[in-house]
View (tube, one colour):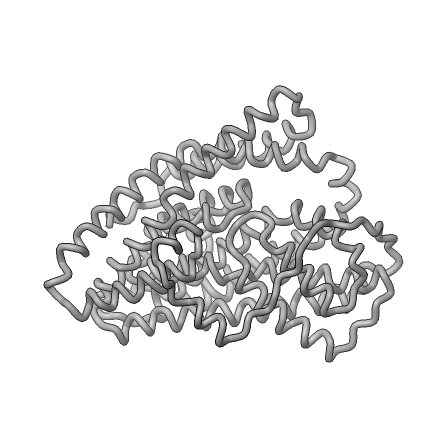
Length: 413
């Protein structure tokens, strides 16, 4: 793995350029002429593909190199166990927050909701047994082709543990993985310089598709959601996780993660942002043994902001439609939301099918899906940004809490 890079002026200039790209993209989306639509779509697609093509080789090879570097099976389990507990805990808390705030404030009461139908199929619950059955891929190559991140992670962990058991005999394969990892990082580093243009075109297309009327009509709901997510990022991720647990400078953390945060906002895909998240973690000195497992796991199961949005909108629509939600039913929604959020893939608008299942559990009218789809599209960028910051915050905290041989635990105030 390349040596971690220090946060420098070049990185800050890139972050500013990405921010400018986001602002200009939103403004251009409001006045985009017809001829520009296919051009923006083409550039956005090429940019996203340039990032996503490196996700699976980077995750697979980096994870194997990381496991081999940890040096023992028990230490590997320690890293994965800590990350899993972190993500499940924060997702539960986020779901609870999303249910409590709108119910306490009565958000949605007296609001007229337009019952527009939407062609959405509800996500189905999967039992723990079925989840475990599907975790181990019968065909690992199909897992890569189909983009099943959980199966890719499981396969990489199995191969990595086998490499540990084989010792020196596995070194030739591990060296190949190290080379592929280096190549992936190099490509991602080059693609990052095109990020301002990529997010400009991505956000312009999103704003143009929805229009100013839709955006303004949902401004109050969106503003509240974005405020809650902002406070969640600063207080939970920054103050509690990074500063409190990780003993790491909040200022340095937020400056360093800007490229990943802005890319996540512009693309609304935590999976596409994963290579950039990995590079940000490297710059903060997070060992590859931790980031190689924690970040892909987070991109797959850490859906804190999705939990906030779905819980919030359940209570909002219940108040708007006069549907009574008992505390017992809220508890069911809370647990269901956590399970569905963990199963949501890190791609744009993945939460829509999950919300269809939640709304049915809560007894909400099916017609609310039309409005939810509009809200989800507009809030998806902020939710993805929040999730990505949570992934990196976990890795930074684990740099201190996960005591591994050879892993530094230097504190940074």
